[in-house]
Each structure stands twice: as C-alpha cells, then as structure tokens.
Image (spheres, rainbow, N blue to C red):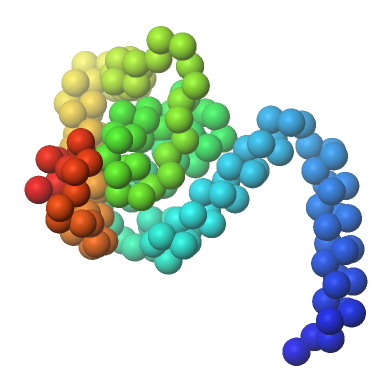
Length: 160
C-alpha cells in the first residue's frame, strides 16, 4: 500500500502532466478523447469489457469500429453509418451511442451511398448484409444480457 502523501503527490504530478498535454491538443481532439473515455468507462461498467471483440459476439467488428468512428466524429465510414442506423436498438441494450449532430442527416441513405461507392453493382446486397450483421449483433447481445421482460420501451418489439 502506498502512503497517502506519496499517493497525493503522484496524483498532483499526473494531473499537471495531463493538463499540459490537454493544452497542446485542439478543442476537437480533447472532446474526442473525453467521449472515448466516457464510452470506454460506460461499457466497462455495463458489460465488463471496453470492446465487444472481447465478448466474441457476431458483428462485433462493425459495432466496435462504428462506435470508435462516431465518437471521433467520422461519419464517412460505413461502419459508423451502420451504427448510426441501428442506434435505437443499441441504446436500448445499454450501449452509449453518440448522437449524430448533422442537419437533415439520413443515416440509411448515407449508408447506402457509402456502400454504393465502395461496392458499385453489389451495393444493395452489401447494404442488406451489413444491416443484417449489425442486427444479429443486437439479437446476440440481447440474449446475453438481462433485459426486463415487462419493458414498455417502444423498441422492445425487435428482440422478442
């Protein structure tokens, strides 16, 4: 056990170093780091892991990278758009998905355009497969975690 005076000294030095490092970052980068820390803490508390990769649920690669991109404000990635599309389901399961603050933003249309750019003629099949994979993640997670059966939540219908 570390004596209290040494512990408080290390805390003071660490805070000072963190403050200096934060001053060098832009406001956007600081905000992004803070959102990432909150997401990681929240997921650790709710699920016991900071990434779904560790849980081994099908579709984790879409959700993990999509959450990472959304937290950092990257709406250009296909995975971020897929997570934005299934946001209500994920939030119901307790996953803190950041809200997309863009006027007139339609995540479904943006996701289809992004898959169309990447896959040309196979866009519709890839679009449907991506949403199915993300949806299967939600169903698998719902089977693992405890959800109240008498939930009056408006999105309860999808996992029953």
